[in-house]
Length: 630
Image (tube, rainbow, N blue to C red; front, side):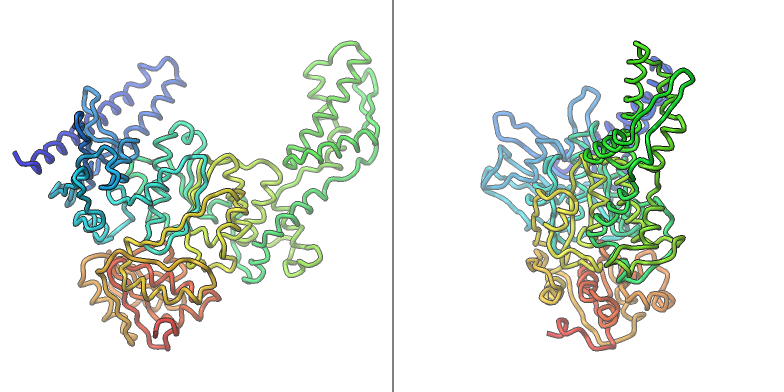
């Protein structure tokens, strides 16, 4: 039997073993209420088994393993590396999870540093069928690297449908980032096509593998720029066996009020200014007032009294401790009750009952003091009143007291909500397209990662928001992770060299300092055509294999959509929504209109040009931006 046939047998054996693992989980799920000691244990076991069944799902079109390691003698141990751990009935590993410590050798071993690896084998697949393999005899100094035909074919495989995982093609520099420790925040400045999004998602999967129980309790969150992007990446983590990761846009994360209005960009930019945090804090804490007088309380047998001066000192003490506002009110109430308790103990020579303490805490004199000196307040009320009468220097924010809320208002309300009470924290957050975060949005994420770490992903050159970052260090400060490492990725595996070269011409005009992108791909092609015939260009692109993206100025979306055919491989996307997406063939229509529509129009164009994986076609009837004509 040939090596290829033996590997096919191992694939069949591994798939059968995975099915057996799933069958055992389904049996435990079905009899959980019979084997558990009580109802709570039965429910817990049921949830765990349901989760396990999802994790063990097998997609026949997805290769169960993609690589193999043969270690040096005398052990000559052999390990197949795949997307999840698979064992036989005896518990022996048939497939080793790519996140396991030993699997790191598959990504990091080289001819210069074999790491005890004799042979590294890569497998070629077609729709789940094993078709070929390549061997690198590292002990003999043989290493294919990016000259591997199987590696290249996987990277260049047509991209139809959602984003795929990259476990079979992770490069050593990417692997270093994926395996960064849980307590470390990293910021990846990634040029187009460098795999920064994939790095972030695979890091999330790796951390869940290594710290499953800890992160199951605290949670992992993926934050993306828009819902289209989240749909695009939604299959990556489930394909790696991770199905309990929350995904959200910034707007969907801030749900205190319904957003039903838009506003002038200048006003929105003011609301995203980091100085707003201090102004809102002052507006909230200004509600605390001196006591109107002493507290006098009668319980039917005696009159208890706390003088105004004592109450003032209690308020000052709590303020100095800087608790969340509502926690401060509770703390003040507890200290008032404690003083009354001590008076009762001195008078009666015994401690009052818990019922007496609860009654005193809810008594009219105590509540009247609290409502006057430390009133309960809602975040939206604080913001509405602030915007109705803004302080000096912020007059442009002024508007009616009962407005419809905007997206920028939601950020302000979240800021105040974080001042009122503690925001629950995730164990780890992956933030993609983070260059477009405003300082106030970054603060909102900082509140949600107070006890966790971050993976911050982006490209300063692709910043298109009015408040887009120019320096990652500033963003990390607003995220409260000033000690986070900034790591550049400039070598692209996705965007062809011809496309990268034309996009790089825009860099000097984008107002940021980032290294030019490089591409390892010499294939692909670029066409710049003076024509308005979108239909003809689309027809030519649909004749090729793979997905097609038509990127248009937002104002032209409806007009172009009405012209193009209905084809599952074709998307017409407004330029404002294309960030993070990728297509085999991209048609960019009217670059001049893209540039003219926004203050950061050149950045928008840079994003549009770099969505192409195989070919880029630029159609224009108006004068091209100067950078594209040189």
